[in-house]
Amino acid sequence: MGRVARAPMQWFLYVVGGLALAVSAAFGGFAPVKQAEPVLKVGEVNAGTPWNVKITSVRLVGSLEPQVRLKDPADHWLAVIAEVEITDVESRSDIRDIILVKDVPGILHDEFNGDGDEFAREVVVTSDGTRVTTLHPGLTEKVAFLWEVKPDTVPTQVEVQIMGKTHRKSSLTDLMEWLDLAPRAVLTAPVEDKRNG
Image 1: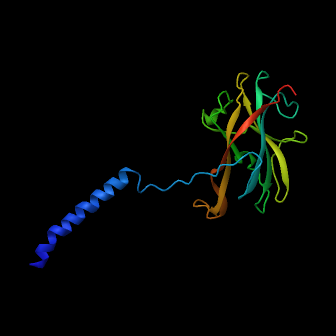
Image 2: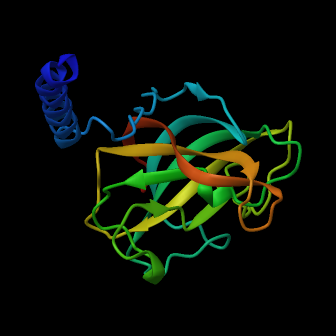
Image 3: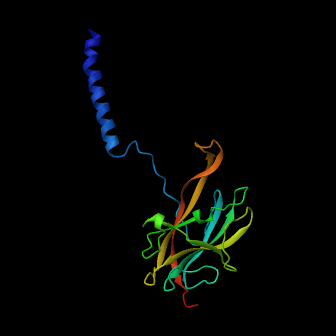
């Protein structure tokens, strides 16, 4: 008799529980919580792996020949100047992965990248303009990440993302690798127009 009396209550609890689950799922209750990237200011260091990064300025600059050439001489460069220190124990050649700029109109996109956010076309050492192919642990290097932009593109500020990677075992190779490139910090930087000097 007691079991019969408890049956309506159990069904009621099942219904209430099911409704709670449905409502929670409808409002993203089971979605993983996406943590917002820290918001930095120009000149602040974002420390992490496999690199520490400090954005020091963002500029529009003209020709940088002979070190790097614009595809169209009428264009100019958007340069994000950063101090980068490799925190990995090995030298890094994935330097273009460090910085990404978002939503810059007039940027010259690589064919394979379409119209999405864009990694730098070139990275050069600021002191002499030589191309950066590798950075080494323990040495802080001041470099310029360069994007070619159209003549009428003169932004007053840009959003810059500092990217990071995770050192974990690859499911393909079973080796420890730096994977999962993802935004690690973000800042909005003013743009200085240095095209004429």
